[in-house]
Length: 511
Ligand SMILES: [Cu+2]
Image (cartoon, rainbow, N blue to C red; front, side, top):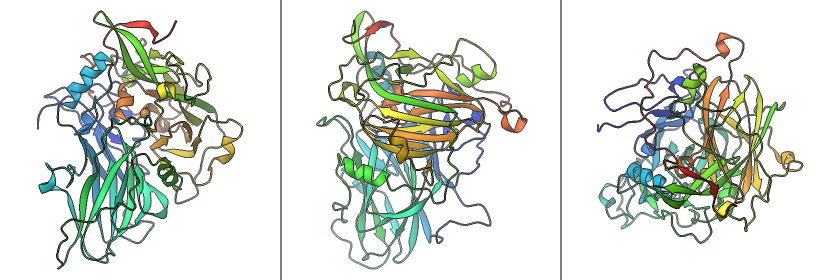
């Protein structure tokens, strides 16, 4: 394998008391240098189903990732009839060039970040890409059998719809947590999410496309996104004459900008059982996720640069990882003042917001929580620059309850009345909808340093992230484990760092 610098993250594995093996660069460790190694100790707890692992440095996760399958414990079984077989499909992005290099250049000059050349299923774009036709991924099934399909969205920057021609999908789990089963003709899955689906091979012997395409919630009429219809083939074993071409799910796979189809699917997710949702909230936060724009000094030229923020803070990586600094009581690497509220309130979803509605602040601001706190975070999407779009928000070290979501500005009086506090999905990633809000709750029972971020890498690279530090409880069982004997050293400056250039401290159109 070619030497690379990076580190890996077990996406969705809670790693109780063990942030040392969580992985994100500058949050819980520094990069593993080429020629060196670091061993992760992965601690599973209540996860059951499908998760995945991926690199968490620059955009290396594009190629460095894989699925994690967690079976029911010995002696227990699935909460549905045992499937006859199973299959893993990993959705990915394909770039025909060195994407990390391109990202680095784009961040240095402030322009938009790269768009993929195609999406892939198990590494192949499929029959509609000439280069892939000979090697399209094929899944062979036997008539009459029921399979558990485990789908991972490892795509860099896109939620996708997915459907199989002629076959229903029975969704039974997401993010390694069981759901009340429901039958769907398509699913919607965002970056970071995993979904477990039962598929019964009950159609005429033949070949059927499994297809996905982007769910684009970006600027209306903005044509620049990857329009690949990625396909793999579900093919029946047996004697039959193969068709000239497999059938395509054209009647069930929603179109790129079918917002109602996206919302309808998300609203179906319910935990299998009644959940113990936190109700005595001790920390309440309202967090606005926004696109921003800056003027900055790029080697003497004043340049416009894109950025993103949470509560108006654009995250800047520290030179030493937050975990090390926190554990060793070293000051100067981060501050504990990530705000609970946006600095000012405006009509977040207005179509006519000036670009300077908020001037984001560059900082390394974290939120500190006491052990055992019951937390509610309401995320609000902002439409600054008319660039509101879905944000798949992902928390490390915890799953959380996605108790509510809706359109418009969050209404502190009315919207909480719509929360599902009975059987909300228990997930590690949930979508903050375009021009809407998302409410999540969790109990802070995992001491450590944990990243909270948008799982669209273009937003992550621009700073849409923060960190929660959960303090130790009173006992050794509620406190951080000892660090491993050695952690990768923080000797080098960040390889890709926001804002390499010196900033002019005013924003576009600002006074
Ligand atoms: Cu985002």
